Image (spheres, rainbow, N blue to C red):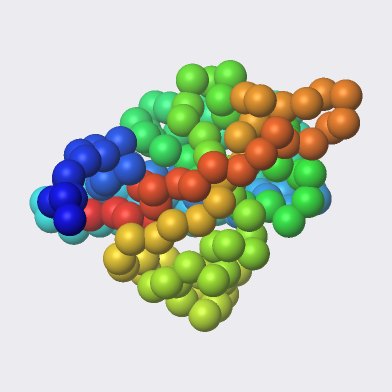
Length: 161
């Protein structure tokens, strides 16, 4: 039997300092950012707020997240309401990934309640590695109006330091 070969896959083993998650609904999106706290080194701060699902509000959100240095944005949506958020934030030069709500709910280390709607003050950090499905929007088939397929995400967004 041959010895296994170890393959370095650093792209999926990232730990990002500045991340954002957006739970997209029909008329709004609940945005949560997790970043290092400036006043206390080694500590993190989470901010949660609601953004209307209008073009101008999403463009303004993109500018705000870009200035904050957000490295990855994860969108969670149960319907097609993700489209304006995805395309406008991507146009702002941000790294955006789309996850299925069903997969996020079953991810290990995720609290049983939705922190964006249940916890008004701070959202606890998720522990451990999380793998889930991410829709590939670049290979979008405009004739059938559906994503071309799914790819596995390495869990970079939920794995925060």
